[in-house]
Length: 162
Image (cartoon, rainbow, N blue to C red; front, top):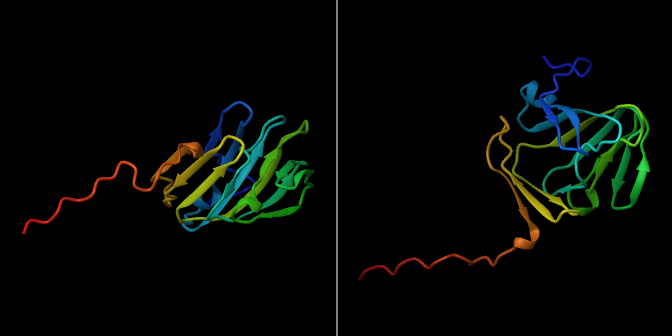
C-alpha cells in the first residue's frame, strides 16, 4: 500500500526549470475518480507551468518548506500546513515554485476521472486529456492560436439515392 512517508515517486519530471518528483498516490492505492499526488520540488525549480483546469478542482496542502504560489492575484509565500484551493477556470490558475534553498513537499488533491481541458496562459497552449484510471487515453497539447472554424475540413455527406 502507498505511504506518503515512504513515497514511490513514479513520475519524475526532468525538464529544466520544472525538475521534480511526483508520487501518484491515489492511482497507487487503486482510486479511479480521486486524485492525490505527493510532490517534491528541489530548490530553484517549479512543480509545473502556470495553468488552470476547466473541469478539475485542486486542493494543495504544504507539508515541508515554503513554496512560492503564483495565482491571478500575484505571488505569495506559503507556509507548512497551509491549505489552498484552486477552482475550475481562470480564477483557479496557479503555479508552485521553490525559491528556497531546501526541497519543498506538498500534497495535491483533485477531482479526476473525467476528461479535462488544461490551459497554459503563458505559452498559449490548451491540453485535452481523457484521464483513464490507468493514466492512458488521449493526451494532446495544442496552441490556442491554431483555432479553426467548426466546419473547417468537413464535407457534407453524399445525397441519398432516390
